Length: 171
Image (tube, rainbow, N blue to C red; front, side, top):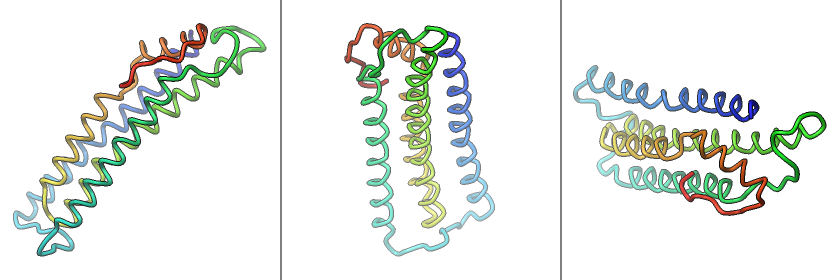
């Protein structure tokens, strides 16, 4: 149980640090707008809809990729035998599922952050802050949906004991 708590704490702190970049991106956009009220981007085009459409499609694909990774992991109990919280020679079995939880969560958090980064890139290129604000909102929703929750981690680990392969879709 202590391994689970420690792994969760580390992952939650790293996830929070990743999430903290979102307001930093918003500050960068605000600074650009305040420094030059007529900021048009580094490569303003007559019609920036192609770039905007591409960024929205990439963001949508990223959102669904993160969702798929997270749900696939949480719907399936880890394929290990033996109790998760045993001592001694079974310590390796205890850590492998925790490593999977940690990796899955951090990959999902980074993918969630990348959506805001696409918006920031779109703003810098086109000067259109709407792109940034829409994708920042999508990124924030992803963080809210998929930020690690101890209870869900605990349920997933407990399913290892029962051999159940049923999970919640939005873990």
